[in-house]
Amino acid sequence: MAYEELKKIIEESNNIVFLGGAGVSTESGIPDFRSETGLYSAKQKYGYPPETLLSHTLFMRKPELFFKYYKENLICTDAKPNNAHLALAKLEEIGKLKAVVTQNIDNLHQMAGSKKVYELHGSVYRNHCMSCGKYYSLKDMLAIDGNIPKCSCGGIIKPDVVLYEEGLDDYVWSGAINAISRADVLIVGGTSLVVYPAAGLINYYRGKKLVLINKSKTAYDSMASLVINDSIGKVFKETVLDVY
Image (cartoon, rainbow, N blue to C red; front, side, top):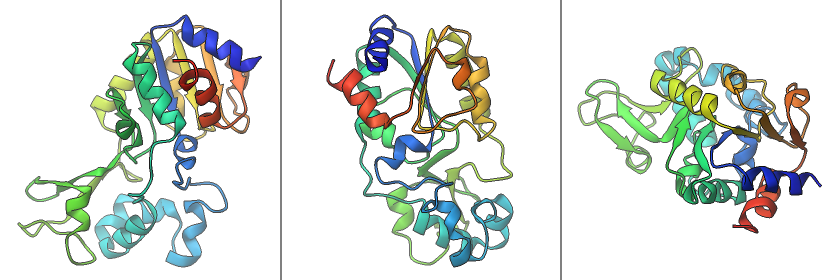
């Protein structure tokens, strides 16, 4: 019944925006932060919790430790887009989806074919020298010898990922707000809506069709017109990929 309702909502709209979290990527084998097998379980191995390991302070003070953790835990070059990514790209291709707003940094939406993607927390696939600004792809950065990737000018290469203690990019944030505030359907998936400021984006939605897709309940369930507690890849396969 819920799947049929989601099909109807999608069919009747040409102004959908999707807001996604870690649950969208876990089905591609990328670990989340808060599960027992996620990144929060790393304290015993590295001596610090992820909030510290991925902080601007540790990056500046202990870059070797930062890059060890970063390369071992946040780089997943073998990951492939799953049905959720493919379905969202399909919805954009046929003119129904206007934007994807994601908390993920894995580039899987773009790999699936999505064009309009607001990456709130940046991307591991983009890197820049902190001294001269030279751009490095992920492949280029990983090919550099040494524990700390350094530019030809000698500067440290920093991933374009928003670390703890750093603010979100103003252009990305305002673009996400604008897209969500103009949407007539907002689909939120793969997130428990507890990480701010990203979770607060839901408050900018002005439409009447809020859809929440997550394996567990969220604090915003009572606000939604449709709640589906199931695998997001399964939901999108049956409501999008098997339909369009």
